[in-house]
Length: 135
Image (cartoon, rainbow, N blue to C red; front, side, top):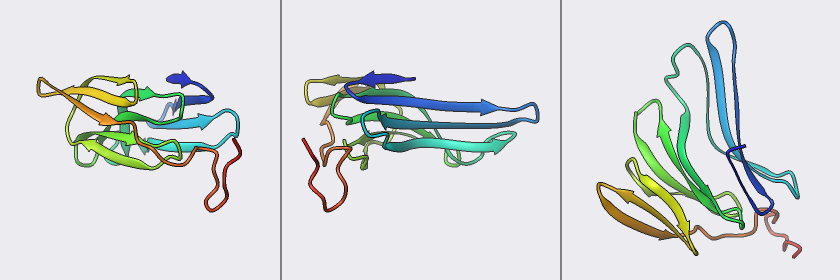
């Protein structure tokens, strides 16, 4: 477990074998419904040339949050916010520091300056497309 808040858990699954194979996935799980949303992942034999990994991550009780993601293919790091329903949006296009939640906002530092964005909103994580969710 990476983080827990409310009925949500961020889980990192990792494995490796004696032949140099390895895999990692970062997923958010709603323990009430069992619904899972993947945010990063890779699987490879030897050095990983594709896929994504994560560094810093925050999670709100609504299931919204943010994760700092690095893409192996490009070497680029970005900050991605995720909504309660799992939709993902890029919030910043470089490495960040001090990622945290302040009320209804995500807060981080980049290049020495503080940046803020509202927590991504959207339908609840347990909603089904076209069907109202039960409260």
